[in-house]
Amino acid sequence: MQVGEIRMSRIGTCKLCGRSAALRDSHLLPKAGYRLLAKTQGGDAPTVMNSNVAIATNQQVRGYVFCEECEALLNKNGEAWTVNHCFRENKGFALREALEAQTPEYDNSPQLKLWAAAEIASIDPNQLIYFASSVFWRMSVHEWKSGKDPIVRPQLGKKYESAFREFLLGNSQFPENAVLWLNVISDEHLYNYFTFPYGAKEKNYCRYEFQFLGLTFTLYLGSLVPQIIRQYCFVRSAKRYITMSKAVDRMVLTHAGKLQSKSKPIGKVGT
Image (spheres, rainbow, N blue to C red):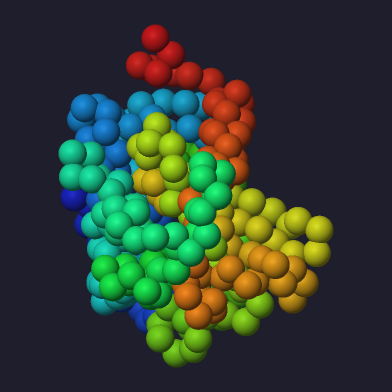
């Protein structure tokens, strides 16, 4: 399946609204993200890695999951804004530029910077929160595939799947005992990269994350998430903190390295 190829809808139950409807050709990560990634590689097909293979392909992770109305909801409340403010080849990185135009609240360069996004008019935290929540949630509620291979996916569990669904529908607040962090990657060499959510249980709570073209979203779940983590929550902190951390850059490199070491290069990637 090539980028831009149109697929017909099919009748089914929308995972978000729960209605029987014509389901659209839905994506786990925004379709526009694939286009942006291809631009960073001169228009060539992006490299997709999983634990089995690494291959240059235009095939996208997609499925018949949401109705047209819910697709529009996801786009309006988070996807479009995030795509317009992440790293865009030849167009800059609007979110990082907005941060760096302001004085950080904490600056221990180059290791860590911390900004109060609530005080920066050009940043819309609610759009970023909705986008991140939708990606973590949609990863959990559908069996997505990369080609023929199912993606190993973290699952939020019925309690949090239900709570995030109600949040995305606008029926409730951000789920209790859920903590979201947002980090802007500082290493420009890591901008042309995105991942699907990954992670697992850590000690007494769960930690999941994904990268999206210069951004790293981290979700902590559980009543025992430490207070030091809670106080920098992008959702609940009054100042809506955003970080830029060398430690997160190293984490992204480590995850990419682990995938690369497990996957077998095929096609153009192997030449």
